[in-house]
Image 1 (cartoon, rainbow, N blue to C red):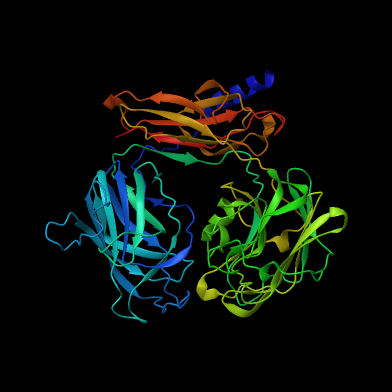
Image 2: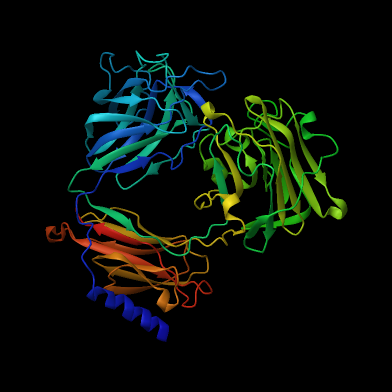
Length: 570
């Protein structure tokens, strides 16, 4: 109780010595993405990108970014057009694009209205190709079908039809931020003639109108220690620095301690899995394929889970799960993204990139004496589509949970293909990823124990006359109590709460009022808030921060969320 009173005094005392910080200003330009990480399942002929959009406020669009795939790569390869420019037209129609994809904007009675045009510059993927609108495109609040039409370059290198990388299968659903709701997107290869396929990668840079209510995040919560860890190697003619090395992953219950290893490559025995057809493949052979599900001779515990089954991916990794489907997202490589590493089931990424065991080499699975370990070996498997770029990767998984990865020759030379290679571990299924590390320079390295900070957000904009919730997410399922603090000013800099026994936690605003909330969360804690429809509150500012109970994470027993700052407006 004494400590809680001390925290209360600190929080309320913070109102006395604050230099005013404000979010009560017109919203700044922001970026909406139909997915947080671009992903390349296949390349498509790119004529028109379609979507449905709902805009809460008038917006002005200054730029759209996408992934073109016109860099002399692919299967079959497409001509390089890097540096070429093309006209991009943006159209809207009332309500929805569904049913209007076959109606040209030039047809009599067309529902499509041209709202603006811009210029696309072709950039080699995995970098993004920008479409710049000068002047920006203005679209009023409402519900629309959206069409982004990419005209062919008429000059430059190999001018002609453009291509893009997209996600397949289309995830569907609605993606939204404070101002835009996005759905029903797709790629049409022959404009205005039929249906759509896949899902494009798009980022929209826009500015809402000046009188818009909005909220912004301030700072970070504590503690961010995800289970996952990884190094992301870009394509390069130079072999990665882990070539001809080995790493021990010592399992200590909630994480790994990674150390240099004296282990060496063991020549596999037996028959390669690739001598029989794969049960699952996105290519009909062992290029982008999965092994049969393998039952382990022991239960494997790993950070964030356990398994008795594994599935070997032909692309240099082992799923710690029973995985079986033919989608590229599961069977394929990453190609500039980290989304498949993050979103698919738990995985040991020995050296996850585009290998092709259908061309040469083999994949071996062996069980050690007394069932003490299992070993997966990618023996001299070439990189696709470079048969001379050989990879030798060995992953030994012990019954204790310890893992050893041994590397011989390695390659990821497909620069024009935009591939990348990932080494690491993830519990998968959308779990958070930390920033990548340079593993060779970091050893010994202790990976995260799975702690994720609570996140404070609003489930609606703070509009005059509206009701919304302040929501605390990412809570431990046993969190039954939190303090919710409300104020009106952001701190000029975070105040370190280490002196209270909360090291690594910070106060982000002046806490004028403390509210207690009792769970259990489901899985969130929400606090309803209503804004009177009184113009006197226009441009007023509110701030908030949450302090959930978290026994055992620090001496004080509370952790902190990020702060939020709200501008009350229209």
